[in-house]
Image 1 (cartoon, rainbow, N blue to C red):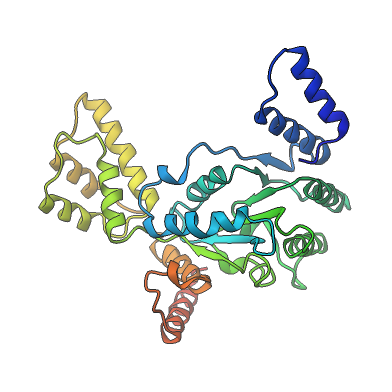
Image 2: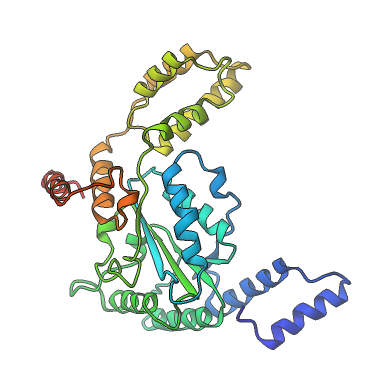
Length: 338
C-alpha cells in the first residue's frame, strides 16, 4: 500500500506490544498517516462513507449499471481498467450521496482533493509532485473530486499559469498508462460543461460520463413512499398515491428528503403521526425556490454529455433529439442561464 519498511515495522511492533492481531483497518490508518505526512492534511481528506448502494432509494436502472458495469471496471487492474468517470446532473439530484455509496462498495483508499492549490509561488507544483509520488506508491486508490468544475480550472489562454499547469498535470495523470488500474478518478459536478474538453475526452473521464437525473416512473413512487415513511398514521390507497405523485411532480431527490425531514419534525411537535390531509397541506404550503430553469439547463447538459445510451431516459435517442437539446440550451443561455 505504499508503506516503507519502517512504517511496516512500526505496525508489527505495535501489534506485538499490544498483544493483538494486526487487522486491515490498522494498515489503512497507517496509509492515511503516511499520505498526510507526505502531502499534508490541508491537501487531501479521506472519505469513509458507511452507506452502500442497497441503502439508496430509487435510481433502479442507475444502481444496476453501477453494480454490473462501473464497479467491476473500477476493480479491474488490467487493460480493461477504467481511468475514471464523471458524474453530472442538476443540483439536488443526489450525485454525491450515490457515488459516496460507490466508493464505499469499492473497498479501496478514497482520497478527496481539497486544497491542492497554494497561494505561494511554486508551492502548487511542489504539492502536486508529492501527491503524484504518493499515488504511484499506492496499489489502488480512488480520487474523489466533488464540485469538480470549481476544483479543476481550464487550460485556455485566459486561465492563470499556475491553474493551467495544475489542470494540465492532472489531465496527464488521468491518461498515464503507468497509473491505469491503480488510480481511478471520480469527478462529480452539476456543471459538466464547465469541465475542460481535455478532461472530458475519451481516455480520461470522458470514457464514462454518467447523468444523475430526477426520479421518474416507479422510482418516483419509491421516493414518495420513502418520504412518507413512518410519519403517516395510515398507508395511502392507490387514488391518494396518484394524487400525491401529481403534487410532487418534478421533485428532486433533495426535495423528497426535505419533505421527509419536515414531516418527521411535524410528528415530533404534535406527538403523533400525521393524517394524509396534513401531509397534503404541508405539500401545498411548500414553494420551491426560483431555480427551475437553472436545473433544467444542468439537466440538458448532463443529457448532452452522457456517454451511455442505456443511462438516458430514452436509449433510442436520435441526433435530431440531441440537436433539440442544443437549441434548448441556447435559448436558456440567451436568458442568462449558465
